[in-house]
Amino acid sequence: MYSDDGSRELERQECLRLLATVPVGRIVHTRHALPAVLPVDFCLDDDGAVLLRASSASELVRAVDGAVVAVGADEVDAVAQSGWSVVVTGSVSVVTDPGRLRTPARQGPRSWAPAPREVLVRIEPELVTGRELVGGRSLYGLGSFF
Image (spheres, rainbow, N blue to C red):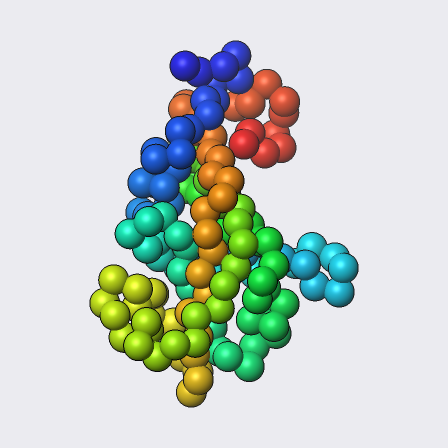
C-alpha cells in the first residue's frame, strides 16, 4: 500500500530481489569515528548476503572487518519521478580462505580494480529495508523521498 507521498515500504525478499538487479552501490562504514561512503561493485550470495571484493591491504578491509556496515543501492528515474532504494545493514566478515573464493556460488563479483591479493567481504543481511516511489514527488520537498 502506498502512503500519502506515493511511496511504500518494501518487504525483505522484494528488497533483496531488487538489490540483485544492480551491480553497483555504496558501502557506509566508520572511518576515524566519522561516517564514510564508498562506491562498490557487489553481488548477492544465495542466502542474501552482500559480497564484494577488495584488496587485502586496503583501508576498507581494515576498517570493516568485524564491524557493522550498511550497503545501499537504488534505481531512480528522475523524469518519471519514480524508483526504489534498498539498504542492507549487517556484520562484516572478511573471507580469506582461497577454497571458499574458488567456489562458484561464493566467488563474488569481479573486481573493477583488481589487486594482486584480494579478499571477499561478506555482509550478513541482518536488517534489510527499502522504499519505492511511483510517479510522483515526495510531500517532503525535493529532498530524498526514501
